[in-house]
Each structure stands twice: as structure tokens, then as C-alpha cells.
Amino acid sequence: MKILTTEQIRRADAYTITHEPVPSLDLMERAALGLARYIEKQPWNFRNIRIFAGYGNNGGDGMALARLLSDKGRHVNLYLMTPERSWSPDAKANLDRLPDEECLDINYLHQLSDFPVIEGGDLVIDALFGTGLSREPSGLIADLIDHINNGKAPVISIDIPSGLFGEDNRQNSRKHVIRAFQTLTFEFPKLAFFLPENHAYVGEWKVITIGLHPDFIHKLPTQWNFISIEDARSWLKVREKFSHKGKFGHSLMIAGSTGMAGAAVLAATACVRSGSGLTTVMIPGSVNSIVQTALPEAMTIPDNHPDHWTQVPDLTPYSSIGIGPGLGIHPTTWSAMDSLLHSCRMPLVLDADALNLMSLNPGTLLKLPNNSILTPHPGEFKRLFGEDSDDFTRILRLKDLSIFYRIVLILKGAHTAVAGPDGSVWLNTTGNPGMATGGSGDALTGLITGLMAQGYEPVIAARLGVFVHGLAGDLASETTGQEALTAGDIIGYIGKAFLKIHNNPS
Image 1 (cartoon, rainbow, N blue to C red):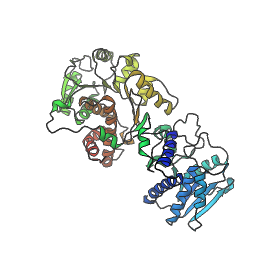
Image 2 (cartoon, rainbow, N blue to C red):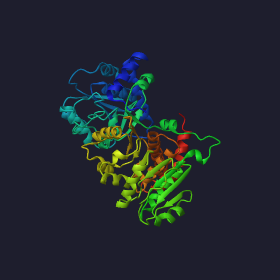
Image 3 (cartoon, helix red, strand yellow):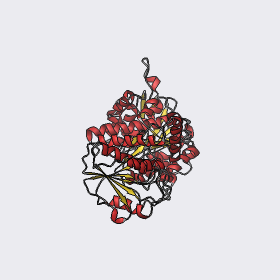
Image 4 (tube, rainbow, N blue to C red):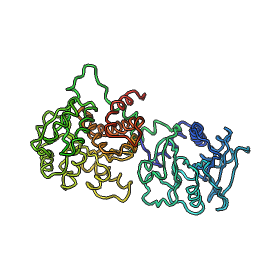
């Protein structure tokens, strides 16, 4: 699904107003109704709901929400900033609609002494600034943001935390940004929500649908997307009745070294679980018996060297090749990898020590077959490509590097990013902190390698692989909890992840 810029969302609003057609005030009412329904469904029991509203359309959303909640009998304290300029037309219209009733207490904030005490039994709703903000807050409203952040109550931000910009925050000091525990955003998440540096402000985000015109949205070009279960379902192939293992490819996993046999087992097991018709693992000689015992479904090619990978096998039988988990960085291993890069023309899946070997041998990126998939975590990305000043710069560079080297780059994290050589970036929406555990990356490498063997295009294999991997981790954590989650648990739930995608109605 698309991630639109704030300017594109404004254009989608305007198009909907003109072509549905619907008055802008009614569109604002839809937004407020969506917010009210969400809040009413939550099992919360707050003593006071305190809504802080600005003078733009975000403030109008807050005023409409205050009216709707008070109509339901919820006691609402509404705080209105004395505007530095006039209210927006729709905000003024909602101000005029506010009822005179006991459940709604309206207060105007002229100075610091007007700020209310915010206590632990309160729920604060931030409707001060929306996506139209182009400079950092200052003056009394900056003081109010600081006051809210210093309060004891949880904060919900409407559309975006006040003080945060929708995309690029490189010139934003973030000195005065609401720290929300939830952000209820309209129609689309903002790109800023996916960047680690903004998590302390955004918290958990939820999308509130307000019915923007689908035809206009479909036509809007964007390089930024997030992976939904509907996307995953559209990519997932359905197996035909008379299929046989030869139709699902033959994966080669080059992995393991003495003391790191587990990495080879995990990667190969995930490869088998992905649906690869056949899986062969090339490992050092001393590791062979371990892999064959742990994974009877896979074949092995033991290297002549007992401890390291040193030789490139005949590549003719294989439809995909993954390399790196537990491989080590021995000089003889680099020689074998260099030989592989010279002899192989099919896209490779490279992870872990394959990436470390590349970072130790400058120029290797230029030797990669087109559409090869690299799966670095942030540390490996830094070693390969250098330091970035912030997360926004890094994701822009991720996109540019994929185009320049004609590769697929997977930057692993809470919202793993998949950048393709076409300039597109897809951000993942599955996964949880319990997956930050040894072997999780090995499982992802095996999963993607197995998808490649089945004929998935590299960029689709990467997107689908990260989604399935994260979903398997989510399903596993429902049983184990996040603290006890292991890579083996993730692999064990790959099948249930595929089932959930297949069974999800589109």
C-alpha cells in the first residue's frame, strides 16, 4: 500500500471534496467520527478527556471529536489556543457547532497560568498541529507541548504528533514535539512514522479511514509503500494440483563454519519451510553430520576443508543461491566467494558474513549479479556503505544505492525496508522486538532464498520474505512471548504465516 507525502494527501483531500463531491466540513466530520468510534471501542476508563486544539484543521478535528464524545456522555475538557491568526474556516465552523452542555467544558489558553494540571487518570488528545506544519513550534504553543509532555497522562495525537513533520525532520530539532503513546492517522501512515528516530514521538500508530477518493489515490505515483497482508496475498503464488518438487526449484545455501553449524541449520530449515522443491547446503566437512542429522529434508555438499568454505560447486542444478550465515571471514572463504561472484550470473541472496567479507574487500558491490539481494542490519549497512547522520538520510541513500548498484537492499529493523533497483521502497509492518535474537536473520535469508528458487522475482521475494518472516515472529510470540522467542520458533511458524496470508480475504 502507498505511503503518500503530506502534499499528496492534501491533493487527495481536495480531489475527494471536488469529485465525490463532499463538503470539506463533512470530510472533517468523517475523520472525527472515525476517531470517536476508535476511542469508544477501547477498554479505557479515564477520569478526564483533555483535548488540546489548535486553530487549523487539526484543531477542527479536535473540536469535532470533543462534540461527538460529549454527545455520548463522556466528560470532555476542551482547551483552545488563542489563535495567532484566525481559525481555519472548518475549525471555526466546528467551534460554532460546540454544544452548551455539562459534559463539555471549554477553556481558552492565553498564558502559562491557564494550562491545566494533567494527572495520571486523564487522557490527553493532541489536536494542535497537523501535517501543514513547516517550522518548529515556538512561543506559548511550544510551552504547551512541553507542558503536555511533562504531564502524567498518556497522549493520543490526531493525524501526526504536533511538532513533527510528515517526512523530512532533518532540520527539526524536535525540542517541542508531542510524545504520543498512540497516533491516529488519517488514511495513510506518514513516512516519518517508520523511522526509528521518531518512534519516541509517534508511539503506536493506527490508520483511521476517511474515504478519500480511491481512483485519485490509485493514480498518484509514489516510491514509498508499506507492505500489508493484502499486498502479500497478491504476491503469493497458489500451487497447482499436479505440481511436483521440480516445479519449485532447487536452492543452494552456502553457510556455516566450525562453531557456527547452527546458522547453516537455521537458514536451510527456513529455506525448506519456504516451499523450495529441493534444498542443498554446502558446509565445511566437519559440519556435515550436524546438518544432515538436524535437517534430513536437505541434501549436503561437504567442503574439502573441515572448518571453512573454500570451493565453489557446480552451479548448474540450482535456481537460487543464498550465502553468508555463519560462514566466517577466513581468507580462503573470501577466495571462494570471489570465485563465486566471477562465475555466477543469477541473483544471489547475501547476508551476515557474506556482507562482512564484502565490506573488507572494496569493489565487491560492482561484481554482484543484477538484482542480487543484500540483507544488512544497521551495523552491516554502515560497514558496507558508511555512516549516515540520521535515519531519513539513510533511507534516502538506501533507495539511491539500490538504483546505482542495480540490487535489492533489505535494511533490517522494526520496519524493515526493501529497496529495489526501480527506486521503490517498501516498509514492512510485521514483526516484533522478540525477533531481535540470534539466528533470526539466518531464517530470513533461507526464507528469501527458497522463494527465489520457486520463481519469485527478487524484489517480490524480498518483500514477501520480510512480511512472512515478521508475521511468523508475531504468531510465534503469541505462544512464547517476546522474551523467549527464538529463531527456531520463527521458522516453526512460517507455515502458519503462509496460511494466514492465504486465508485473509482481499
